[in-house]
Amino acid sequence: MRRVLQNLALSFFSLSVVLLLLEGVSRIVEARRPKPPERADYIWDWEKQWDGDFYTMASDETGWPPGAEFNGDGVRDRVHPRQRSEGIARVVFLGDSVTLGHGLEPFEAYPQVLQSMLDDEGRALEVMNVALWGWSTRQERIAYEKLVRPYRPDVVVLAICLNDIPEIQNNLKRPPGWLLALNERLALVRLLIDAPGREIQNVEELFTKGAAPKVREAFSLFFNEVRALRAAVAQDGGRLALLVFPFRFQLAQGAPAPMVQEEIARFAETEKLPMLDLLPALRGAGEAAFLDYDHVSVSGARVVAGVLATSELLPAAPSAAVLLADADARAALADSRSEVRAAAAWTLGRVTPRPPGVLEALAARLRDDDSAAVRIAAARAIGRAGPAAAGLGGALAKALSDTDQGVRFAAADALDATGAKPEQAPALIRALESQDPSVRAFATYSLGALGAAAGPEAAEALARTVEAEGGAGKAGAAAALAKMGAGAKQAVPSLIRQLEDQREARRWRAARTLGRIGPDAKAAVPALSRRLQDESVTVRIHAARALGRIASPEAIPALVLVLKEDRAKEAREEASRALSRIPGR
Image (cartoon, rainbow, N blue to C red):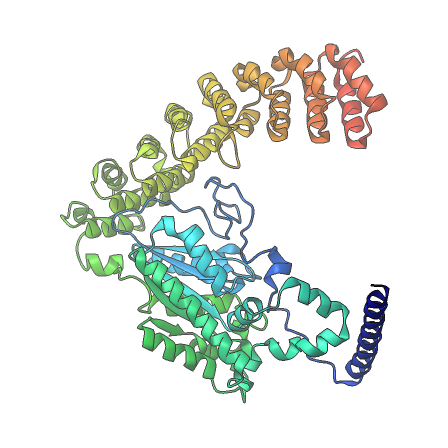
């Protein structure tokens, strides 16, 4: 047994020496070899970037106010109604940072520009932008399955950037984690694995090494993802189309032949997939159409949107001008065809000067038409009139309870554009009970904008909303109460209860609102004083600020204690300011 152990030890020692020698030789060889090209930074390692193969941005947006950069699905687009509105086709663009609009404002991304163009033509199409930085075809397929499916689009446009192809290859064929860890530490493993030789380092390799096994495998994996996406879209009754973006180097003089686009085109033809190659259009626009290697500029986005607007990728939807031809728009509001009535509403929203009675006729369509598309068009047309249509606020407020979600969205937009008035407060209060979170968010926002003029019933209703669910949307019922100031004194008992909530956000918002109410919130002084010892410094700061605004001498001992003992400088400073506002201090 002893001899066996000695032999094992000797074998282990010998093997270790050999491995050390091999590692040393490998390091010498590695040092003398030409440095391999670095992988382009636009080819992402999904595990390192997202700790998985998919991600979205954290967001709890419900739709109002509509200016948030990321919606409730965690992508860079406004909130869209999940319910489909009859007569309005829906197209979804799946893509990466190019489709998202990297380097551009959200409204400058080509899907949003396309929506503006379609709106200007009066075409009944809704465009959705579902894209994030670094997504490849794999993430876009997952996004369809996880995010897009409930919206039931008519057409899904897969926006393909050429780096999608190597990215899929490099990530799906990557060795296991333990081997990658050894690769980082040992030259011997690096020589054996030859990661640079196995991975595609940049898009140019698709052109210069098109016959290489790794490139052929990359195309195969990419096409498999497209087939899987097409199957999912078809299963839901939709149609998949392809939109192919070039890289900027393809616009330069002496650029290689567009063999990658040609290969994708052959695949699309075989699979009977509609495809639009953007290389000709962007080549005509020149390099000014790009911000960098592949992201389009503002002008480039307009070129893309313009090409799409006239392409066959989009669902058929004639413009309002084509539908109306030379017909009188006012008379066309009574046409038997819903698409003509919608076109008439669109046209009347743009007529200047506006003939007498037009707004009232549009309000009648909003109230009585059996087509959701017509009601949406009527609401939007009224909204375009702005404050001139303020007298129709009642019709718009009533439409907040429409059975169609798209109509509710359009009515909220229009009511905001015309300006909510105190007389709409009862309808807005009723909207706080809506099952649609976007309507609730709009109602809280609008009641807050009315301020104290919304009345005591609004304050009580908002207080109930705060207790029921902590508000709805970014504006939130608590924020609306804060805007009402002293007009929200009926909500004081509810807000006091919120100070004891387990959720930090509810506690600090309740404290903030009580401070905005001011001296009429004196009953909250004991509860606010207790919150000066809250574990959250944010809550302590807002509690101290609120006590300063209420300005009750009863709060002095608790504020002095903060001044002496609180470790947070910001809390001590707020307590000092609060003490300076209390009479007799």
